[in-house]
Length: 315
Length: 263
Image (cartoon, rainbow over all chains, first blue to last red; front, side):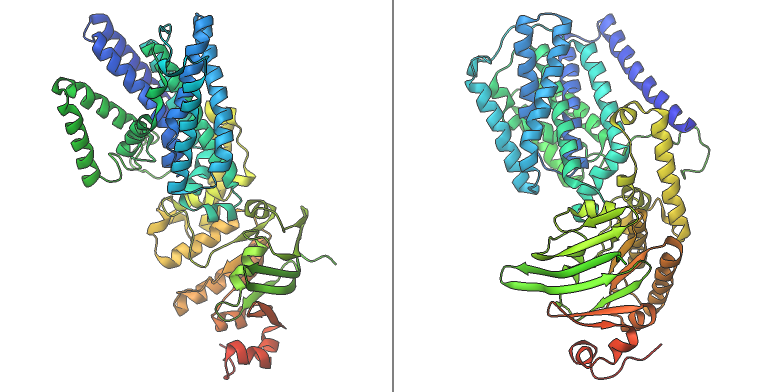
């Protein structure tokens, strides 16, 4: 019990420290607009990839539909802020995006989560395309042209705090009865059922949770970038998030954070290389997959549970 | 008197193949029963029906415990498991990338309740519940001498230990009826002897009725009280070990000419 409280305080300290550090850099002018942009992109990518890691890495359900749920959040915010231009309107739009994404995830998940592996990937990819095509053809979403001049409420502190809350929520989900249940589905769904685990229910729970975080990421993206169009939420976007998950290690939350940061740095550094950037980026990915196929961290997690306990690592 | 498990004329048809046809059996609380028969006789198919993995084509299965009566047909395997039936698998199905402790704790999922708010906010009640199931899992492992491998990854254990962990995991669901699908497969004589002791211990200490599929006749004849013999999907005999040993049809179809030595 004491150990848990201590570990939680260390995490809290790290998160507050990160905030203060960025704030100080921002204040002293070390961080310019370009770098701030990179920070926020990394933060949003972490939120998106956390949700996808829950679905792919922990529950073992190969979903390629993350961009669709992201689009739902982005458009909920984009549309609602046109008439409710206030911070309350922004948070309300995040909530609405989450609710719509949850409903969509249930509608998509109930039939498709019976499928396995490749079949599930294709079905979720199709579902995500349906969302995109619907957005492309609606009047309220302004069709293919998309939405412009969305008010900017998602500044970097907002993104940072939401990112921390997302990490805490996903980590708490994973390290609980729920997390063990979804991992048992990943390991062996037949054995899980024989041990009294309602596999359909837990698969859906993880899928819905992941979709909700994608919607939150989409909302932040829309309000930070201030411009959205349906073409941004295609299959390539789902794959970009998938790359973060696989690179960091499917099944490691720490890995997702590390991968998002590393890719953010690579992206920023390579900005000066022009078109060569994508070649170097791809090469780095290939090398990593050849030498560390389980991802940067595999399934390793950073933990402070044993800090301050001398010697014995046993629980 | 109501039986713990009552199976009435169940049939399982896969396309044109009748894997199990018109099997009826009863199991009473506290019994130790073996299901034997040649390979392909439908033993595992019958297990799968009884535990809710497959739904029988026809016939009914009724499961009665202190908690009430349940019709197994049409129920999902997890509902059947929650009602008090648990099992092991012919080819071990542990959650092999997880620790032994987590394997056991997962089997307690259906009888722990952690709500969303306390999980997300890490309320004291959450830690209390986690501690309670962890303690219970550890006590269970300790009772079977597995406490030192609690932190080991299940898939990396030696075969015999994996078998034992699978049985302990099945017990963690608090079953009243336990199905063991070829528990002694691939074991040497010493391991088999240890397994027999383990099964007796489970029966005595955990108040569990056991049904097992087994090809090791020495184990079956010495351990169980009653035997059902299945051949080509049909029940061909039922009785005590000595009755089965002298049943002409069973000897012809399965046991072979020579009588089985008592060991």
